[in-house]
Length: 140
Image 1 (cartoon, helix red, strand yellow):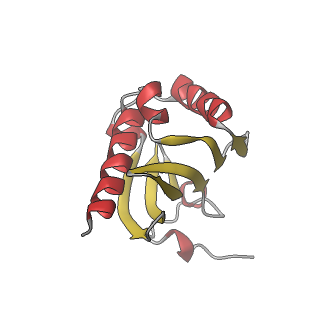
Image 2 (image 1 turned 90 degrees about the horizontal axis):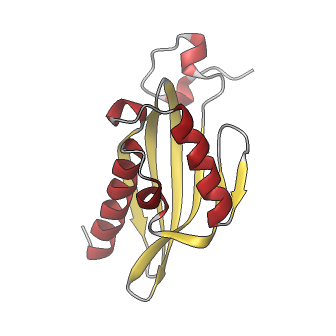
């Protein structure tokens, strides 16, 4: 594993821990000021750090915190010289989601420039589907 890959994994682990702790400052750390996020609930798009912050304030208003409220697994990181992509599966309360992050390297520091949170359709929670593979849900 490269130093860049390890740094990105640490950034994402700190982000996950901050969300679990309902730590807004920690959740915003390592995010670019012009981040673009696509989310599952409304608003489905946040542009810039201020709008991104507002989505987390909403999440924290309904989240009890703790590992059960927000847990990543199967994290994969693909690193280039100045751009990286990370993806993982995400358990958020009772929802099964997918997470994709794009990161850009500025000098020696990696910053999250894009997040995409998505939910399989139909949602396994709503259909009672037990598959570990969210893509296994039948499509119309």
